[in-house]
Length: 458
Image (cartoon, rainbow, N blue to C red; front, side):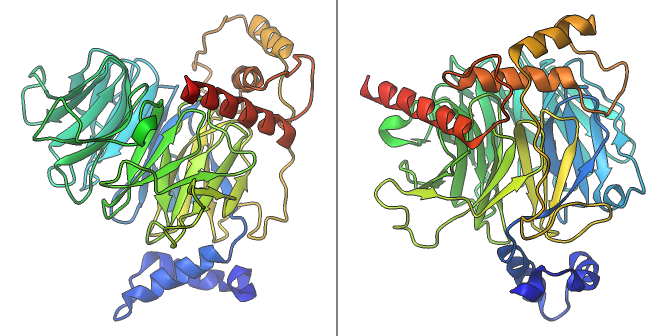
């Protein structure tokens, strides 16, 4: 496998990533699959353009030529990936701007329109080519999730903090009443249409966990995943490309995989160091056959697990202990991750202002290696006192303004999220200047598991 890892094959990479090999379409997939399977780490590169935390990223359909991103700076940015990686073009700012943080994004199937939703209680429909705003759909509360129907680009679903999942038709009058699929007392953080059975949708609710819905039978879920533990705080759901499996993230618990019509988990995925407690995160499948899963973590790393081919793997608890790959390079919590199956490129983002691009192929000005031998210099966590000092010295209180339009790292924002991490670590002294060590994360995990056991016994 040594020759797969080396740089001598880079000359073939452009050809394989841009063209379909006539007569042997499986050759490219096989090459990509073997390339990733032979890696222990990936090359990485930062894309700069946002002035605050990047809360949402999505690849375009049918090749992933474009990436759309949004965040705390309220702007929707469109990146031409090849030009951005080669530093030949800056991102395009779409003209429609939100009034507050952006939380979710979606392309339609043609990639001609982009939907964006956020804290300002509205969904904006953008024209990609002209950058203009086509329509605005008002909600009663913050919008956390968006999904476009796989069979009708005029239909999209939104999930909101008001506990509703709404189905909208862009052809209807802007102030028309949408179809209400679900209405709970607690917030829906995520929603997704099944890519093969579009009448089915999956949701993640802050108190009711993960659910499966049929658009023909509103107000009552078809299935509540998790069995006796279905009442969990869920924040993200993703179908695989065949619509047969569902991946979900739950607060303070490892990622979990379900078969579409089974309420009990197929597998849970864990690793020493992985933790999900401080922020809202998303997950996704990866690989040409969705054979991997990806999730960011509070320990500043991005984790990739391989889904076992043996359904009995993992023992009675069906827990896959040990990630296939741990990608290190972020300098704060990693919240968002997306995989492009055509180029095998991964994009991740979170508290930092950067979008990090990971690839098994070396890109211009990328760093790292495929063996994981090159280590990034870790930083120390800010103390609570340092955070308070940064807030007081900034002169702007707790609010963050983006008038300066700086893409450079914001120490105050980093310190704020460091304080959240510290708060989660049992017995962490505020005057400690240690970095986010393995021991600290183990304390996080131990505390969460004790909390989970206590909840179960109750």
